[in-house]
Length: 169
Image (spheres, rainbow, N blue to C red):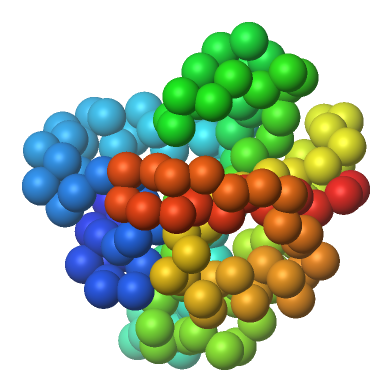
């Protein structure tokens, strides 16, 4: 997960989507990456999904697994400020950290990640899945629109105009 995040932060298109720098990610100790992965796999109020590319079996029969995409869904708690200091009126499932490696873009990976995130949010009872996307991230916006997300607002974030989108579940 660490390597995939560093790849995302280095990607000039995707880097506007993340609220951290490469330097901040590199400064995190391995234990924090392990704790984050464990929390995303086991917590009731958040989940992470990864897209895995399996190569051909090696001489020993094992497959090489390469992570090529990821998304995290977490709960924005009602009454508590979120990462942009907005305070939701109700608990809200929010999709963040969406990334697909350039080598597999255009092959449906983003669609599968969005569907996994929506399925999780639906399964724990949320009526919608929300996200924020920078206005310059036009490829991501097109992907979200294709997945039936609708624009529900906009605001100015740290790096310019952000678009708030929601998917009814």
